[in-house]
Amino acid sequence: MNFRILTIVAAIATVTATGCTAQQLYSTGQSWQRNECSKIMDQQERTRCLASTSASYEAYKKQSDIEGKQGR
Image (tube, rainbow, N blue to C red; front, side, top):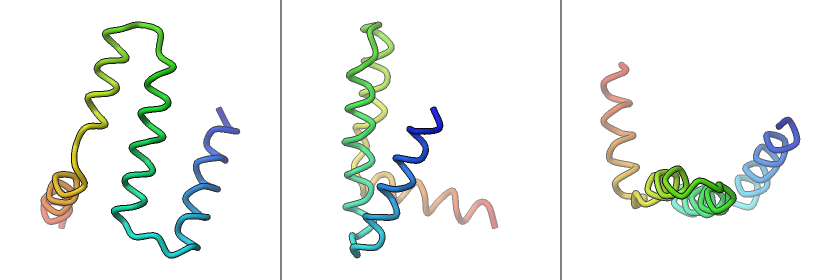
């Protein structure tokens, strides 16, 4: 578990350091999540997991902006 977290942090640091856009970072995160979903043996759980990766960056950004404004 700690290795997984360390890997994620390292990947984010690398992507951030190379000047990737937020949209590229979001896309990378979705790809990683889909890969993790594919490891789930239970079909229903895997389907649920994969469904959570289907939001476009625009939909994610819009929801993020709404939640950010509500938190103020």
